[in-house]
Amino acid sequence: MAAPSVLITGYPKFSNFEHNVSEKILSLLKQMDFGKTKIFTELLSVDEFGSNLTANRIKSGETFDVIIHLGFSSKSNKIRFEKYAYNEYKMSQPDNSGRCISNGEIIKNQKERYQTNADLLPLNSEFKAESHIEWSEDPGRYICNETYFNTLNTINKNLIYNDIKVIFIHLPSEFIIDISKQTEIIVRLIKCMTKPYLEVVAGLIFDTNNRILSCRRPKEKSWPSWWEFPGGKIEFGETPQIALSRELKEELSLNVSPSRIIAEQFCNYDDKYVKLMVLNCGIIQEDRIKLLEHDEMKWLSKEELFDVNWLPADLPIVEKWSIEGIPNPHRY
Image 1 (cartoon, rainbow, N blue to C red):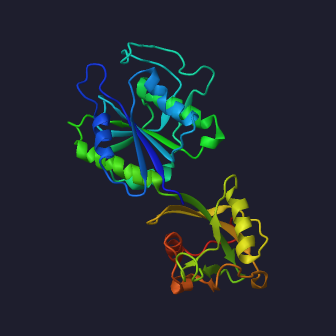
Image 2: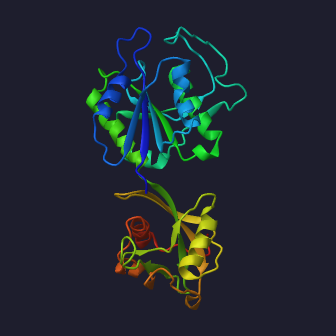
Image 3: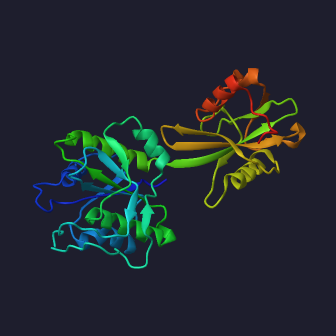
């Protein structure tokens, strides 16, 4: 897998402010070693040209895995992860070119707003205990919002850019939150957004005794000899049901039509994030199952659930069922 590339932008001072904390953090990030991750930085001008610069770089063919826009908010006492960008001007002061547009659309005849396309589950998991951070739905209507909207509009208008994850972060004054703390959070954000995030489906398969099927991973795969519910990664354009049906055909030579999702679990592995969705596949006769990718299988009752060593993503679900009981295949 190619090394991830990240573009981080900030702004110089504007209006009557003596400095811009985003410019300072940008300078600190440029001095850091991010290992194999490629970091590119850009100081954007506080005007129309600067608000279009990232979008124009993408249109010209530059590719990034992640774009993190940083900006200064004098009204905030927390680091704000901006959820939306709006197609709207409400500039209460001129930008550095003297432009001051009090109302109107940024781009005519486009959507009213875009939501960040960053994966929210890993972000919420990484920063859930961080009191210095909050999600915001109001990025203002100044250059920060204009930059954010132009970037997301470019990505959403062309499918070839869909894999670029974009978020805008508003930073408070360094006198409210120390710049070292703010920088540490941005470093964590970079690592969070560049770690692969996979959505995985697994089949809950029952026998006639209400036991469930577990399968052991072979020695040539990652996590060898650990046990799991059979299944795999959702491919682009697949629903969980379609993905699981394909995976069970590939792994167990089964033709099944999975029904509802009956359990979900998020897991932070060292090398990736995984969202596991377990779907009911009903009662299956053992003679229909042929192991094509696993080296062993076991049927487990509630009392036998811990007879095998479950993968970290599967384990919390199994622990819950060991207390509450295995789901009824006829209820889902």
